[in-house]
Image 1: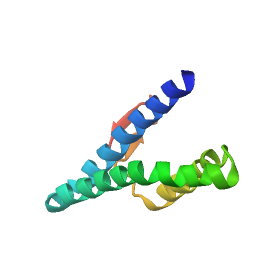
Image 2: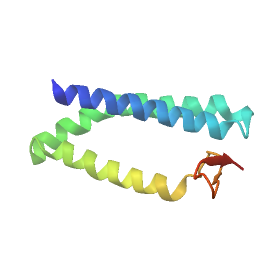
Image 3: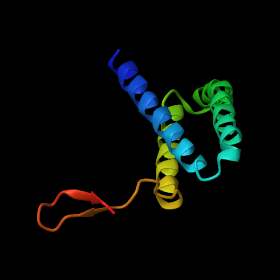
Length: 105
């Protein structure tokens, strides 16, 4: 039960975050927003179809822990790639030297 809760929270935060990021980037080129969000949804649907097939094959060939190992490696690779390749979309905030409070700059 606790694992399901953690999985649900992770998915909720992940999906909200990636959709917000895509929407933010697409404000620069509004004409492609629909296509970008549609491509994201298509990949998510495809993952829901292919995931159990690939996971089932992995379990049969390499044991019940293998799908989790594959997901962990893929998540680490994706996180590293995103951190290195995706641009920051938040505005830069300069700190006020006297108060330490951020000021939009």
